Image (cartoon, rainbow, N blue to C red; front, side):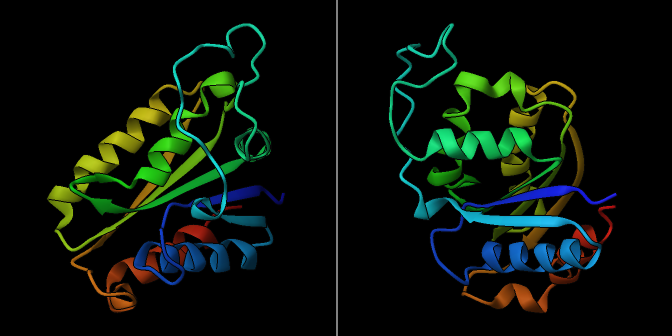
Amino acid sequence: MSKKVLILSGSPRDGGNSDILCEQFKKGAEESGNTVEKISIRKLKIGNCMACYGCRGSKICVQKDDMEKLLNKMIAADVLVLATPVYFYCMDGQMKTMIDRTLPRYTEIRNKDFYFIATAAAGKALIERTMDALQGFADCLPGAKVKRKIYGEGVYQKGEVKDTPAYGEAYEAGRAIK
């Protein structure tokens, strides 16, 4: 049975290392017959959560931007892929802002399979901090299952990830979704 896969790329640049791994994941998932949509968070207008709790009760954020549509897609997906470059040992700002803005309906992001992709000039041990932060988000979601974490380590310049094991791992992880 085909699954709905939503890939959320936190990369601030087209063709960045984490974005390249998103494309590999997408290619594998599509080849397995899944419906796949990749969204570049940087292209959306998503304001910071204001912690006003205007969403309490209504489940609707007071801000009128692209987050409501994205949140609907996250809720509808079977599989969520969160991909980010690592900046100062954490996910990039676009990804964190998006996660914070799930507040109005985060409990509806339930029973999803998650895949995390992170790329950095640093090695796996330092990328683990970012993976822990992504895991923290999944831990807040009912029935979330983290299926795989892909470490694009030791990459700095655009495109370097193509020469690492993560390049093939991203493709294979997508291909394994059935």
